[in-house]
Image (cartoon, rainbow, N blue to C red):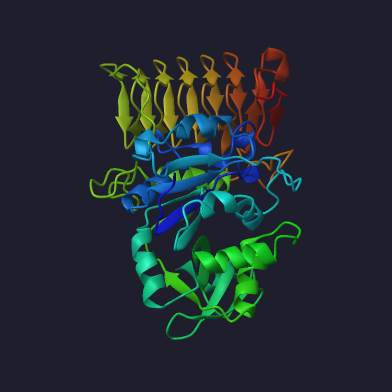
Length: 425
């Protein structure tokens, strides 16, 4: 038995996140670690509960196991409720033979029955792969005040960057008069954040009418259709911190921003908490001569070396004599003694052997995918093993259990790649 809800949230969390390379080889992008102990999906989920939204459908698809395990029944976000709470909504086969979600709006359409069961007045559509704090209740108040049918959250961006976004053109009252998808000559700098509030009957009609559109998408199909129907579309301007961590470099930059003396994005504000699944692990340990300078260190980690300007996850071991700079080391990783790591992203449960040097020498373009592995970063995929005394250059990627035979003269030069196929989960 469901109760009527004023607004429910539908959180799109099925993205592969291919621009994050090996980090999303075996997990959906929203499940990737962020800021030591968190995962990307923690941010929109925490926004929901902080905004008073207690009913959230999480739509999963690509490699959902880690995400499903992390969300569980929603206890960390106070979403373990009889009436509402969090519900994981994977694609399923119905009598209409629909199965995989083929677009953002198609995913929502396939869950009409779930939304209908709450008979909401409004539906909030969210993406699961951005880092930000936002009070959706304020956006809902804006939606109501303007008697809007659709409200789209927008953010001002520099005009020279506007061509990379969906751009909303508005009048003086913030009513949307036109929109341009990645325009060559933008007429506005208000970029869509992919966050929408729909009045329920408008959303339902739009989805039912357009359900046969291939790859049914909000930006390409639903929003233009609503505009053509003469619906009231408004732009809600957001001026807080919002980061799309869709590339390895933007992901690295967002993590590094957390360790500023006065960070632009504060993970620890009492009035707007970020909640996550708590793992029971023993306390951390800092050796007498260890250093952690401008570094976040997660619970249960043992630091025996030196860490500078880095983000260290939970249950990580940093060996004696090891020096780490400008790096992200995720949960469960082991960096053995006498290593040197510069500007690295080390995924969960990696093992780096003694005397290994990562991120040294001059830069060279990556030989497999320079559009992903760039900006001088060294990226190690989950559970990667590197043997002792290996030297690795910049713009490199390693994924899998490697041994000395995988390296020429114990070296992977800048731009090099070693990707070994592992067992799929």
